[in-house]
Image (cartoon, rainbow, N blue to C red; front, side, top):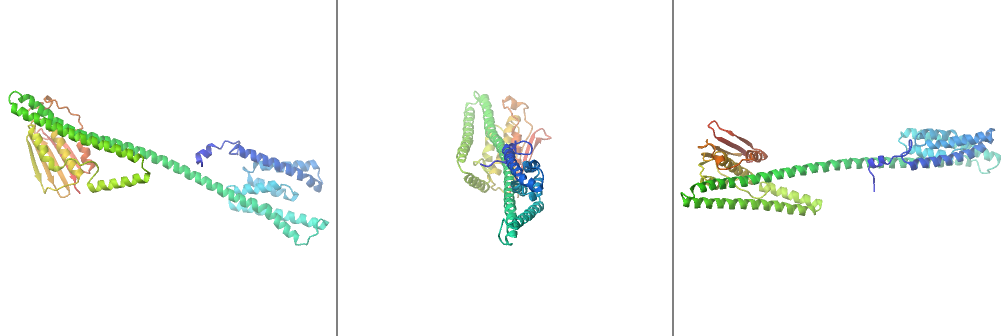
Length: 438
């Protein structure tokens, strides 16, 4: 299991310049062994140099203990090892110092220069010592052995620690790079998760708004007509029983239509929940393929969602308003043609909501519905004249939530259209919308 850079940084709890306690213990142990080694080698050095043995031991102990700071000052450790090479001291100090130097973040030219100095010093000292041994008769080999021994010893004490240090340093840098990349990927994944959550929340809000808008369009118009017919039914129940029966039948038909549309919407919502449960158990690749296929179908079919009302049902819509006592004048300009499902549904809902507002706020007012089929767009306008009896809407008991115009604007703007509404100079109200049809 790998750790990220943040976890690695939190794990650096060692003393002073050590990242971890185990590193401090390791360096302390190496320094102790090196000090003992140099102290022991200081005895023959003191005898050869003609100085007190105690001085040689103390000198060796001090020189060997320099290994304790190999991580902090590796160059100093290598220089000390090179300096005590003529005394034939610091074998462990030189090997570990060169390894630490090669594994550090130092320029290659510095590493090469110090490694070359160590190689040259070891070769010279070995050459001199072997030559002295051969002169004393301790070695009886040929003259070829002197340079061979010097070169072999120098390479054996210099090349392996330098190469190992270079390898460990490169591996350490690679691990640090991988940790940084892991940190970067973790941050990116966190940002993506946050953005995905934001998009999901935005999608949920949009879906709630869409459902609220659909519920408003479906329920408000039907229920408004039902309220109007119910009021008329109360007014004529005793005077004209036959008209009361017709009004009651209309109220029943509108109630059934409203229930049918509500069942369709609830069916769509339940279908969406079933799809969500199926998607939750699907692999990511299958979800992406399904989403792409759904998007393609939506583009071909003209938009997502179930098939809604279309412009061919405007006559029936206006007939229902006329049956409720509203005088509605419909005029159509241009060549009648079919549009994408979303465009026709939006145009229908705009006219429907505008008529609903007339029922609510200007009951009995004459209304003009104009529909224009143009080359690259479709325009609609619903304008009502001042109501003959101000306050009739409130008398009928029709509340207003103030969301009708907002919903119409949202529908039209979502398709890239333009929506304008406001009172007229004559005291009526006008709703206009233009929707691109390309």
